[in-house]
Image (cartoon, rainbow, N blue to C red):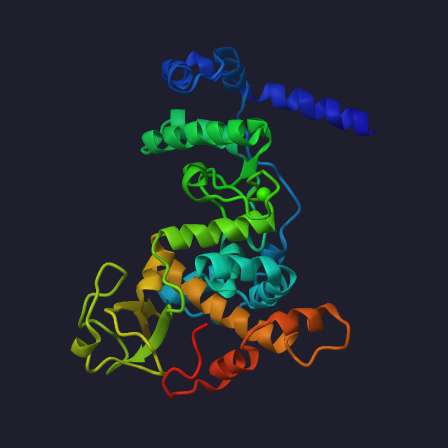
Length: 370
Ligand SMILES: [Ca+2]
């Protein structure tokens, strides 16, 4: 029975394969890869002769999809309501806390080396790939080839991504046709575009390979990406502020505009916010009112991962929730000799961190963030 399936799949893949070497641009691309990076023309010709047409690989419904609420009760329709419904959900917090527990040592190592707190790295992995459960079901080589050479307004960008993808495969000695990712070619738990590999991906478990499908390397790479884009250790990310009224129109909002806090007299943080540099105003449109937040430098840094205020806010909110859940679920008085006890012993300043989150002390510098 299995033999038949294999034969059927083989036939299928060749039926749907397209010869891209017919295209002059592809032949030029191959020439460039040869002249710039000494790639074997025959090898590339062979690759581009068999580009799979239907690149989507069906798989079982992901947990995320199953968990989507289907009831008919009223759902708020503000832009943020909709965004957060798609990108954040209750179970993500639990899975995030679990991920933090499981990868405690690696996350701590990343925090020490790059200064990015564990919960932010974890939240990005949660939003990008649902903690590795949704890494994408498309073959990256085929997707990028379609995007680079078929009608597309960003062919230049995708040709560069394809070039970097092939270079990455060579460096890492991976078969290009085997790698899966998102429809637009993003790969692994961190959903890095191929061009990001060269600049930011790191081998964080020292096995000589960079594999963003592995948690250790994904954690190190995300932390390195944020650090390289300006993350400042021990600085906060964002805090909610109050303003007069229900809708905020006065000043320009978004990560492109910064204000001195002294000029924002009617816009005050709702809780202690130990940050003196200029801030951004981040507006979240909800059905009944606008939420307004201060964004610090580190908020801006998160938007370098994905150029969107809502993305960075989703990361911030999820990170905050994950950390709270982690502290309450995994850091109660642990049983003797358990892994938890071992991990808890290594956790520095734990009780004070918990206090910070649970009671929001207002006295200055009681607790260093995070
Ligand atoms: Ca590695």
